Length: 599
Image 1 (cartoon, rainbow, N blue to C red):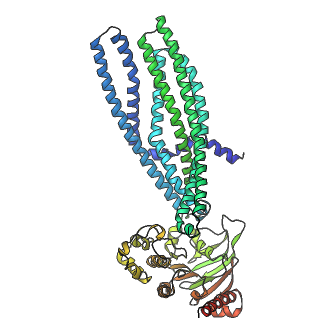
Image 2 (cartoon, rainbow, N blue to C red):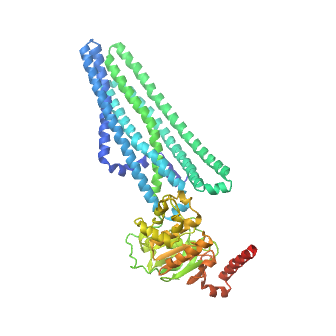
Image 3 (cartoon, rainbow, N blue to C red):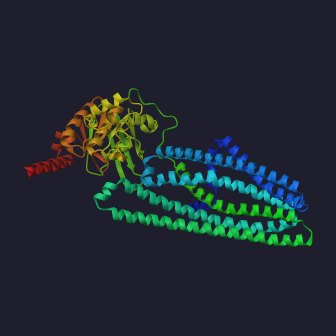
């Protein structure tokens, strides 16, 4: 076992992950103190009951004093009311605290994850993250809201009952105290196994949830390829693994509970037998034995419940550890502590200076190899090249999804690593090829990058993107719900909404990743007209898979194997007979063949 694995295993065998919740508890000190107050009152009231029983047996039943008995029964009623009220208030406060802390934790984890770099999402499944925000958070809520309260209450009860046992009968207490280590040590040992297996069950459940989310999101693709059986089989296997892991955790926890109850009540029977011998010998009153037995039962039941709660706390510790992993994740791309301001107004000059870059998931394979490129303010540059040449990587680096290994990227002469991420991305608008549409209304989707935009501004952007004509035909127009990932819209409609989103942002730098690829011929003509207006007076970089879309570019830059191999206009590059000429010949020749075949 490696040092890392050993450290991880040690962490899993403790409740230390739950200690990370202390800052959240500190935010609600008043509620925590109120919960503790009512918890102590409930425990103290419970511990007072055996004293009343002893007095009633020794001084009421022994002398047949009806008035004394009535008085003590009245006192028991009062104690019952106090116990009921304090227990109800304890429950209210602890459950409220649990809900509040988990809400804060979920919000903080989501906010933290949202700011992580692309490298994190390259290696982490989205379903895994969602599982931690849901299932693991629920486990923590149970621990903070109920289990921790029960554990604390039973700890107080156990300590108080043991103290009163010693006060009642030191000789009998010695027997009980000797038995306690025999009871506690097995609980701790088995508790570690419960936590380890609970963590394994949570991991397997997260795997199943991750695949389910991925499969459901791609339901149409799954159905198109008749992949339902394969998807179901894979999900069944994942669920079965989660079940077996959970069953192992339940088996360990059941064994833990059985051992605890056997040890606890076995010791009580032994002590009770010894006490009965003392009563028969006249060295102890019946009331004293009754009081001692009640305290023994309270101590034993408290220990028994602690064994159950211990397993729940172990599970919550595993969940807190998993959520803590997300909070401990450090983004590979961060804003500098003292960011440099960008020139105002931003001109839009983009420079790449001898940039080398390899994706973190593929460190041995360089995506860019000494790429140098200068895009002047207001210039339209088209990036052309075969798949995998590095065109999309250029966009990712401009947006600082990643940082280059060596070299630098500048916006208006300022290294973008010295600029805050917000300021940088405020100045860039993107129209991707794979458009992201969120569940919600069309208005919300267009205004996604400008949440304060008015309805008039959204409508103007939609008209400029040639999207207003299909939006106006919808029953609820801009208030139409588009469904998850915009599945109720066609590919062309989703693309026009993305273009409207970019138009509304009105950024000085525009990145277009084949923005008209999903449009039919008529829509492409209309949208291209809108893009021609949008590209005026701003820097535009276009990734072009179809060469027909770049003929109007000021300059065409040909990328191959991570560096610039050619630059120029369509005419000049076609005459050079290089890579661009070969790509153009293949595309335009194929187009001529399609036209001929159609005729």
